[in-house]
Length: 266
Image 1 (cartoon, rainbow, N blue to C red):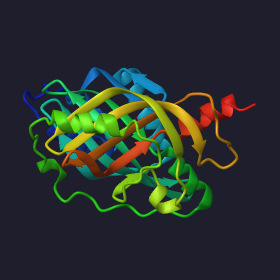
Image 2 (tube, rainbow, N blue to C red):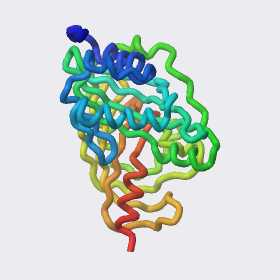
Image 3 (tube, rainbow, N blue to C red):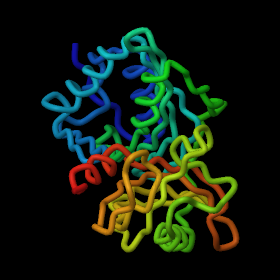
């Protein structure tokens, strides 16, 4: 029997249902309780519009490829109508195990989730499935579902907007981007402009989805620097103190960038 959605659920409570009741249980029968029919996922260059029409089939396809796939939550920040999470997904496919990270920003209408913009590091998943060497799963947050919303911090948001105009790789020792801390291979990308589709703060923490435009300068085997402007989708959760970004976790759609570079190559 269908249940009426409960009113006045926080974004964190809704995400808990998404992770625990749906994703880690592989139980699609419950999603109508906390996800609107018009739910839309934007990830990389792709948009999956409609909970039942496109989003659920796309996730179910992933679950079929990784039958035991699960999610570990490492960090949450939230506002009154949004929750951002840094997470890892992990599972086996074809006898090989992979662990890949992501940053997702979920929107809420007060009783259901209405949409998400995410980036997942599918390039690191591809690397592990090819090599047969599995990356470790980072430590989980001990209490993600106790996360509370803090006051917005417009100054911190401005700092992040300016910081994302800087080139990659980051020079911050406490900034982790994709799997660079594991492989030692850095993406070199000169940023010329940034468009934000999501940006919110909770105290000293800022979550964002940025569409960075610029020039690829290196980092992919077999692909030389390119003087044609390229798009790089970037999600992150970063910590701002004393007017500067000091640490954080950033996931970029490197596979999408690589595909555009290959298409543009002579």
